[in-house]
Image 1 (cartoon, rainbow, N blue to C red):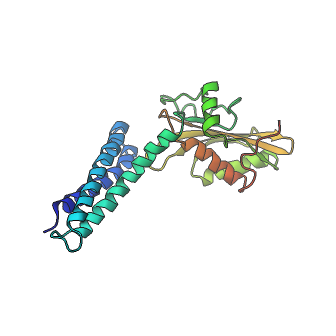
Image 2: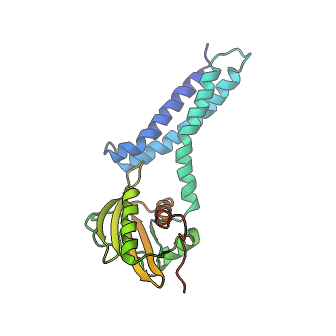
Image 3: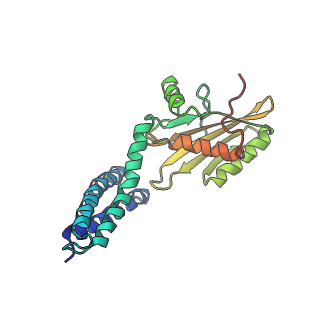
Length: 250
């Protein structure tokens, strides 16, 4: 007879994995509100811990030479349960490692402003106006590597390259003015489908051009580091793997 710990641990682990997998996409498709999606993640994590413990108990009882069967079921419960809680626990860990901010800019003294996306942000929980010195101080402490990019290219050429990189990254470009050196776009996160807005400013520099980027979430107090990673990835691609994050000379 298969150990009940192994059998029900596996069933519970599978249910948890399904709940975690559909929580974000379900919110994105409008099946349930965000609090429900977060609740699914939270309770699925708790239940997955129970499934892993049950699987461990089942593995002991159904170990080779034991009186019970279901050793493979028990191992599957442990594996699937651990996988189900890995994602939510990672998000929780990230949340404790970064400050509760959602507006990141390579220029915190004069952040690039939004214009074209303001209509799209109407009703958004987070404002498009920059939060000021307190936000800047938290960003600099958590993400000191986020800095402008200097390119040995004319502003028009740099702006065109920046627009191409934005498209390559899957952003929805809302406005692009090569002459003005301003690009505005919206990035959508893959799991929950959160909308984050990005503005790119290209300005003349002594040896070419300077690129500043600002990325702001529409909802959520903390972005779990998403906006900073997005900016770094963009500048890395734009710089071709070199020069990213170089601060302009004082």
